Image (cartoon, rainbow over all chains, first blue to last red; front, top):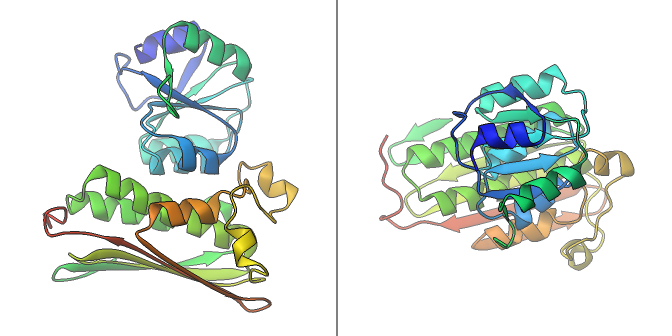
Length: 117
Length: 152
């Protein structure tokens, strides 16, 4: 699914754009525990989280996840935005809760980056 | 970051509680490894091990250092901290065991996966700790001439 389609689906907005809108997202990681990202995530293009801190961007960089989505309309601090720009991570925001976002993405055929299902 | 023929090394000071700078060492190591043409899977393993080690110092210790050295034979990461030490290393190595305070968990850390994750991503792993003094961690990930292209 293209990045632009994901943003439209969750009524989101692009806070930091480092990927083309046609960038293909196939697998998703969803957690608020950053060690879980580092431990369980295999290949994936999108991290969905309710954390709005810079460490999320660092974790995404280390785990090779190029797109991060912050849910629940959490205010994204300027430090997080700056880090995303520095690390070339695309940063998205949505008002929707994590459960709803995951359900929508799953229904569109996106897979888990943990087990590929 | 310093280069001596085919050895590249770097050293970072880590401060307890300094989350804003967390990941700087791991990020530099990742950039170095990618520039050397090391395969992505190995880069990922080394970066994750270094990042978890960095976070352990920032979460638990007063201060520490992370030193890395990349040679054609291996990626070597040394982390030394002045912290509380680990009372029971076997327990600390169990997935899910954590002594991190609640405020750290609220930041997305302290799931008790750090040390097991470092060990999982390392080819060789050595952990020594003295309660009341600190902890030293040695991580080695082995390379071959084939996956150390040295494009620099």
